Amino acid sequence: MINRRKFFKYCMVTVIFGINYGALAQDSSKTVYLYNIHTGEYLKETYWEKGSYNQEALNRINYILRDFRVNEVKQIDLDLIDLLYIIKSILDAQNPIHVISGYRSTRTNEFLRKVSTGVASRSLHTQGKAIDIHIPGIPLERLRDTAINLKAGGVGFYPSSNFVHIDTGKFRVW
Image (cartoon, rainbow, N blue to C red):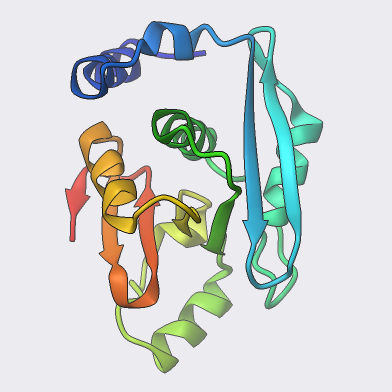
């Protein structure tokens, strides 16, 4: 179910991108197409049909976005999944969304903080509210700009690592 705040936020998409969000909101089904670059798994899943979420489909999405390092699954924020669907629709992306990082356990997050820079101690990845992605065939700058224009959460741009971070926290850009 879409709330009033989210509806107005996405109505801005209509103005910015010239698409009809009303049509997106009323889609009879919503599908995401994902590829986990670490596990080699593909998933094309219709997670929303006829006005409601399909829990079995969401479970499969949660699984492909799991912390593969410790094989831990967490429920992914529905707003994040919807955001991926909206971005895919705006960009008319035909290729799968390549997932660099979905859910991260606190253990994995701490490990990554020790071996690399730019990993937040209280990362939204640990709550299932963040994802790092790129989409083959879509320029990284266009993916970033689309996410920024939605103003649906945080957007981080990492061109040297070839991904865009998207989360459902407060709107901010880095």
